[in-house]
Image (tube, rainbow, N blue to C red):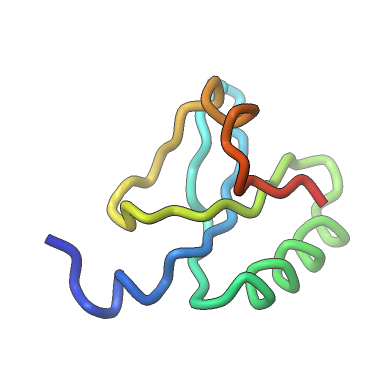
Length: 77
């Protein structure tokens, strides 16, 4: 069961690991907050692959990299 605080933060930034797994590096309440932080990460760490994702589960720390292309709420800005 997710806590109330965990349910509030459904937008996340995921990072692609060398093992072809995605790991959640930050969670946000709003899409605009996630996009702003994503822009910062992309500018400061340009060689690392990040994505903004909508994560309803809240408790998963790793996402399959194979499901990413079919996910319509993933943003590759």
